[in-house]
Image 1 (cartoon, rainbow, N blue to C red):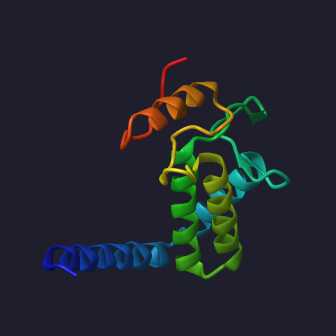
Image 2 (cartoon, rainbow, N blue to C red; image 1 turned 60 degrees about the vertical axis):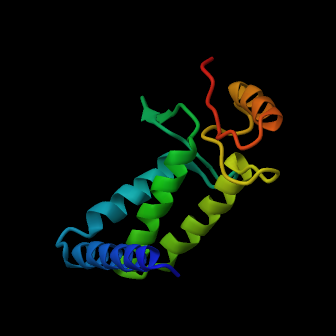
Length: 141
């Protein structure tokens, strides 16, 4: 391991530990837990494992994108580390599995920003297969 990667790794570890320490000492820890519960009840379909991007007028309206999954997974892991409620860890793992299924590129590796059911992604997949090392593309509708 190079000196730079060792320092980066140590810095990220300190950053993570300080963030968890702040969450644990925060007197309002139930607030992020309540937010996660709201998301779980209103923006997550437990039958399909699908996450919704927005909630308006009493229901979800737009399917989640890659960043919605990654941000929620990160928050759930923080909640788990702050309170050690295994529920958050289990949900994070199931979301990661769904994220891999929806956005993962098993052939080339990495992730796409939009799910495989997004019509604009089909064109991006076609372009990516013809041009090597091209990063994921999100084409306008």
